[in-house]
Image 1 (cartoon, rainbow, N blue to C red):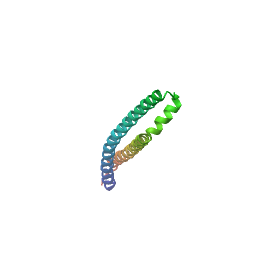
Image 2 (image 1 turned 180 degrees about the vertical axis):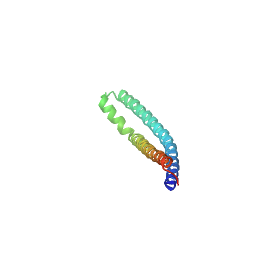
Image 3 (image 1 turned 90 degrees about the vertical axis):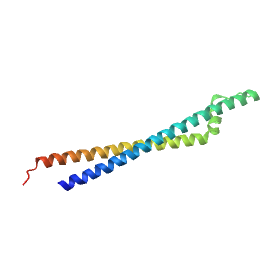
Length: 123
């Protein structure tokens, strides 16, 4: 029983370290995703303004749908980067949730073993 408790204590320590590392990585990923999204939004606005300007200069009107399509093509790299970083952030969030569930399970096992140890008669 004591060996099991020591094993769970080690496991809890390892899970806690993993949780801390993952939480730190999550913060970095969140910042990277936010900055990439800002770059994408800014590039989108700049592209829309440029399309409007070109339309005014040429005298050819561009529909909203065509303008959006042209802007999308113009910012495709920023969009790809932002969406990739947002996907990384979503993955890290799922990792955090999984690690928290593992930690909770280990804590429950630890409590149950402690209760069992306290209830078990000692010779």
